[in-house]
Length: 290
Image (cartoon, rainbow, N blue to C red; front, side, top):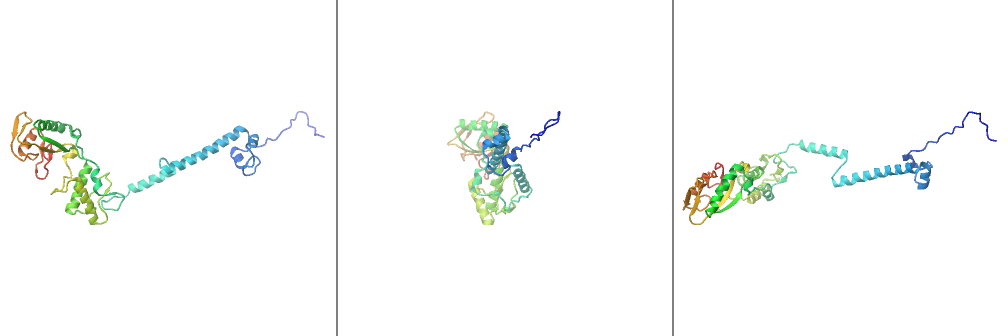
């Protein structure tokens, strides 16, 4: 016989605690470990929406972990811990002093360096004021029938540095380990022994086209500032040319090239000066002859 209840008192049912999403997925609705119940039973036990939320959360975590592994392999993006580790390694490398002859990861010298930091042959790369003078001089030469070849205009400082020290090592047996470092230029002149270092420097000298120089090329030059130009000039017979003042000059002397003294005078009238040391720098012209 069912028990009687006093009037005014309601029967109180103890509400069962529903397991959270993680517990449901981990243990199953029966409380046992493992997926021993089907999807329909899970839906009846915890509700379809709760199950869908839990599955979506779990799926998202798995995808994120896979993405991190994939991105980390490609090197495009890494986790915060990996970034911190890379930053520490970079700081360690940056804090290490670099010496010219030290065995580092710097690129060793060789002929391939002649292809880096190329010299321009464009008049547009010259200093604007000097470029204007050069254009007028070249126009006069070409109208007179001379053949003009532009060999060099602006030259990067890095190339000047490479040419100078390669020549010193190859021709004067300068110690490669004592070559001063140029900031932001990753190069190593020392190959572990003197003979190999000299051989590599000689390869550079030949590739730069300075093997025939009796003295080292300039370490600093007006070429670096865009205030110098290398010209090869030639003509046949007499050269009738107008100078910077508009006067016609007739050059009958030899040699019929850029080292002709009368032609140098014409160049000066335009503000384009041939190198003072003619024998050393036959094709060099600048704002002041240096």
